[in-house]
Length: 355
Image 1 (cartoon, one colour):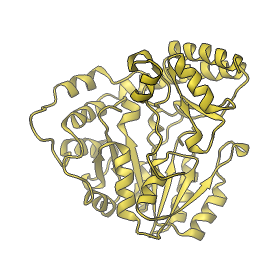
Image 2 (image 1 turned 90 degrees about the horizontal axis):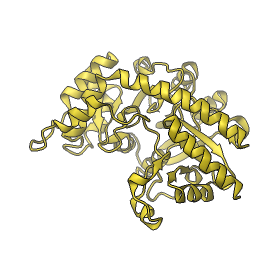
Image 3 (image 1 turned 120 degrees about the vertical axis):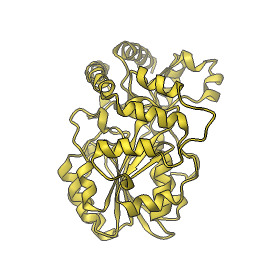
Image 4 (image 1 turned 45 degrees about the horizontal axis):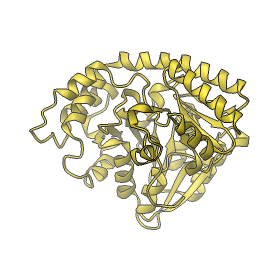
């Protein structure tokens, strides 16, 4: 990929203007967030944040709450301005020019962008459609042992394919990284997955860092909030490069409230499960291939992803064109409430009928 601006989901207001649309007129299936939006508790906490005072630059209360949740010491945690900031901090702190970095692909574009900025030699282990976008763990272990990368990026569940590796496979990958490398496990979508397993015990191996985003499970894309859990030396290296006041007061207040509202995520999982079943059945009836997904988005093969995306946008529905993942025949659909999904299916039926 070109190392310019990384392509992401979400609405582009300049593009919407070209189509004569306002953001409130568009159903956004391009961003993989909780379909229920932020909970009332989170909205109240964000609204009550003190806007006139500097935020706590150490995010102490938030990190204490996370430490209690994860069962780790507070020095194992770093809060960030979304997971993207933390990806770049880890890359800058762990990679020197010429170091090797391995990325499990196709996946989120910020990993490669961050590694390239750090001057690393980037290698990708790319899963293919023919194998259900699943990597061979045996081949991955062999590649890690041969390359001896300083940093390995694994998104699990993976964006955009929805593949969710089981614990045993991730443990095998971690053990192959060795004591001088680091496996960065980005499990931002795990909390919305069908069969969640807890990755926190992997921190005990010493060479695993876990990246999480409250953006996804609590629909906080607008305030940007994520966190990194890792050994203190990994946290210290990243924290030394972080700008002061990176996490604002609204984000910290919203994050604390989100951690007290597990019921909101449980409710979202139920909505996602039912709407995903509907979407998969209807897309199958339309004759398009849907990759099995463990989480709240679907990778759908439609022929010309960019053309289908444009046609849907003209109808007021935004989906993710997957060309930037190297999957130009695919679009990615976030799972929204079932009523929204009905509208999407109807529009997609029209688009496909029009060729």
